[in-house]
Image (cartoon, rainbow, N blue to C red):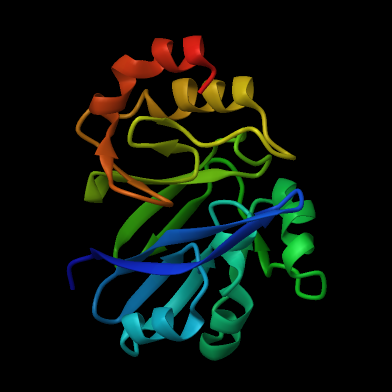
Amino acid sequence: MTARIDHLVTSGTFALDGGEWDVDNNVWIVGDDTEAIVIDAAHDAAAIEAALGGRTLCAIVCTHAHNDHIDAAPALAAATGAPILLHPEDLPLWLKTHPEHTPDGALTDGQELTVAGITLTVLHTPGHAPGAVCLYAPELGTVFTGDTLFQGGPGATGRSFSSFPTIIDSIRDRLLTLPGDTKVRTGHGDPTTIGAEAPQLDEWIKRGH
């Protein structure tokens, strides 16, 4: 079977530092007709399970541990038996949402995840969150960036656990070095490409995006 990317949008709330905002999240499913992984189990475990269509779920991969990206992860894991994978530096954030359910495994920089015959390489890209990661799938011409890089700029860094200089370093050193035609599939909103975003780096730095 040929690997493909399925896309689901779920809606809920993002809460941190005493604030709460309505958000729409991108949920990415990478796999074939037999097996898949889910990138960011956001808000609606039942909808994500339905989108899997009976495929074996090999892993639930968290790009970071803000509640809107992980709130449905334990329920999806319980329904499917899939392990939840998170970079350990985001465990303090995870525990704010799920204090009694820890992830099943750790993501590490350079780690390779294999599904449906293709490889996704974990890139540790701190800044939006300490344990933020992106997943690069060269065979699909895609990088899944969570909330590290969006169309038009880096993810937000104005709240706890975040750092603007760190996210700029992550984007410059880990993402803008990828081929320009690499499609950027984000945690919220529309996709972009590395080539479309790279020329804007200096402008982001000037405006402290």
